[in-house]
Length: 288
Image 1: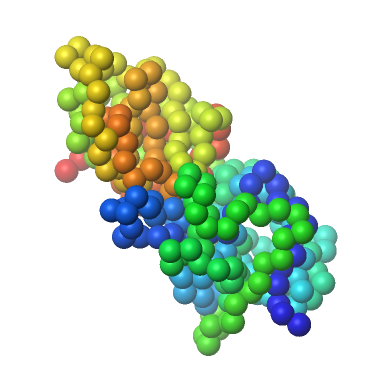
Image 2: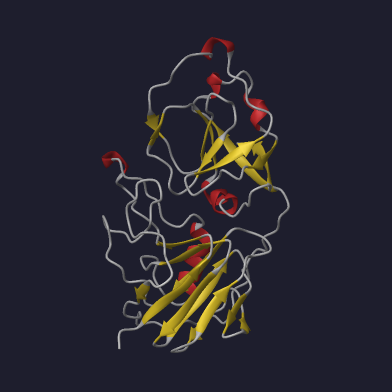
C-alpha cells in the first residue's frame, strides 16, 4: 500500500507549500512558498525533516485528512485546536496518525496559518524545483480539495529528538514591526505618516496584506506621476494611488509600478503573515 493522506475537508484554503523557488526572479518567477517560513521550518525540524520537503499550509483551520498507512505529523504556526478521531493532540509536538485515523483542525483563536508538517513530505511533482503553490502565477499544485490523495515520500534516516517545542504565543493584540525606509520615500509628502497603527483589511491574501488607515499623501511634485516597474521583495511596502499601503507576502509579484517606500525586516514578515483581518499593525522605523 502506498502511504498517503486522503483530504476530507479543506476549510477556507489549504495549500501544499515548501520554501519556494528562490533565484528565479530574473525569469519572472516569484519565490512563493510558506507565508510564515519560521513556523514551516520548525515543523520540519520536529519531524526530523529537511526544509525541502513539502507540507500543508492551512488558512483558518477546517482541514481534515485521513491516513492511509502510518504517518508522523507536527502542527506549527497558528495554534488550531486539533483532534485525532476526536482526541486532542498537542501543538508543536510530533505525533503519529495511524492507518485509518482522521486529523481535524478547528479555526485558531489567534493567528491565521497553521502548518501540517509530514515526515517524508507531500510527494507531488515539483514545478521549477519546488512543490509550492503560488496563488498569483498559478505555478505548483492547485489548492487542496476534498477527495484529493496526497502521496507521502520516503522518511529521512534521522528520527525526531524533541517531544515538544516552546513557541511564542500568538495573540490578537497589535503586531509591532520595524521598517527600513526606502527606496522611494521621496514619493510621499511625509514618510513619518507610515509610522502609525494600521488595520489588516479583509482583502488581504498571500500576495500581500492590504492596510486600512489614514491614506498616505503623495509629495506634491509626484502627484499624477507614474513610476516605471521595478523589482520588489517580500516585506516591501508599496503605496498605490489611493494611499493605502500593501505589505507584500510570499506570492508577491517580482516587479511593481507603485512606489515602495519601506521594507519590513525579513524575520518580522513571518509574524505579519499570521495577522487576521481586523488586527492592528503598529509600524515604526528601525534605529540604525
